[in-house]
Image 1 (cartoon, one colour):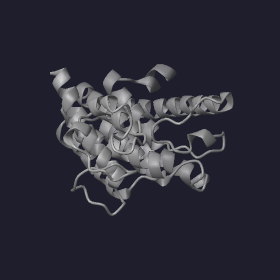
Image 2 (cartoon, helix red, strand yellow; image 1 turned 180 degrees about the vertical axis):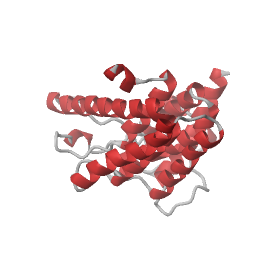
Image 3 (cartoon, one colour; image 1 turned 45 degrees about the vertical axis):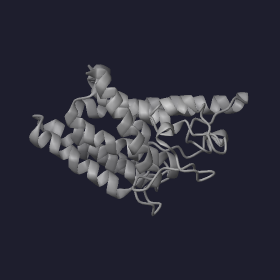
Length: 249
């Protein structure tokens, strides 16, 4: 069953890649996929999740242009999401995956996506999970926390979209796992940023799939934070984390 869920998730992840890349471009979700470089229409052999990327050796069969590592990474990650979390959380995390793709590419979170995530997150405590008062307040607390960072820094340290995403995560996961997700997000964000800076200084390739400006990353660079929040939320849910409790008690 776990293997089946992983395969299903990888297939969905392939579709989410399309959604994330086409969102806001004016191009609909219909129509055949094609190479971004030579516009060659892709056959079914070139669209099998994960396997096609490996068989093609990360290059287009038509023009030999490089294929981004984003595609297999998102497919594998979505497969892991399907295989590791309860089904009631999967619709929200599918939206989170699209938000991750879009935020990494454009450094902004579309309102349509984050508002949909908030609504779906609200359905979990309303119909599936019994929440305490603190669990219900987790979303507004995280929204206020990120909103204050956005306000006090005038948008330089944090985007307002991150505050909306924090509201969704708090509503979805409740207090213990929601707060743990945000703590993890800061830890992961700091670690990844330091790693990129280290790679830059050593001259090693710092580009990771879909961060086009990774080689220029410095301590003053703007780094999308939504992906770290989402990865933290996934890990917190999978491992039932309660970092906040452990840290203070």
